[in-house]
Length: 111
Image (cartoon, rainbow, N blue to C red):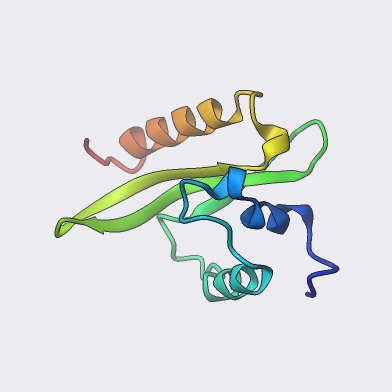
């Protein structure tokens, strides 16, 4: 994959308005390398999945869980990032609600 052939979903990572709460924009090479390192093995419980807009079939972001250590404690972070074009359509609310419900009901996580 080259920067000229990159899909729109990768372009999100370079936009400061989309990544301002994620340590800022990331370059194309950084994103490609990070994705290659994170290729799923089928064993992941806490991972990110694509958000696909039903009307267009386009990947407009990702959402899921990330395992973190906070002050020496293992925590599971609910995470989502959406392309600017997907803002204001309720996708973040829908994703967060579904992830919350899944975490408590299926994964049996506690608050």
